[in-house]
Image (cartoon, rainbow, N blue to C red; front, top):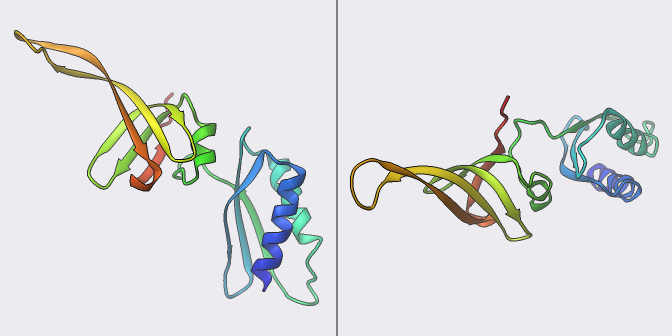
Amino acid sequence: MLKEKVEKLAEKAFEENNSLFLISLEVNSANHIKIVLDGDKGVSVNDCITVSRAIEHNLDREEEDFSLEVTSAGVSEPLTMPRQFKKNLGRRLKVKTANDKFDGDLIAADDNEIKLSWKAREPKPVGKGKITVQKEAVLPYTEIVEAKVKITF
């Protein structure tokens, strides 16, 4: 019951700032509410505060005691939703499927799949040595086991 109330309040907060979206919402047996959000333009501390207040001020502590934590999806967190992939176009990703691993630039993302591009060194078709070739892979979300943004400095 508490989770449904919180979900509705979160949806209302996201309607007010439609660049934000919900990644996860958990309520444990001790009524600790944990909300992880992301945004098309990133998430600021003020965004977390605004969502937190929109929820907290509309729940009655007399009715149910609770604690509330609102955080943004961390850099090391895996991407889980098409909207997160779309926001990270142009960035380098490490993607695992059941049978393979890819490390490439995210060049396309829609509601069904992503497209990665990278350079690889391969043996020359004729003669000795290697050449650099451009490779691409189209991966449906259903095949992706884990995808993370690769941070480079």
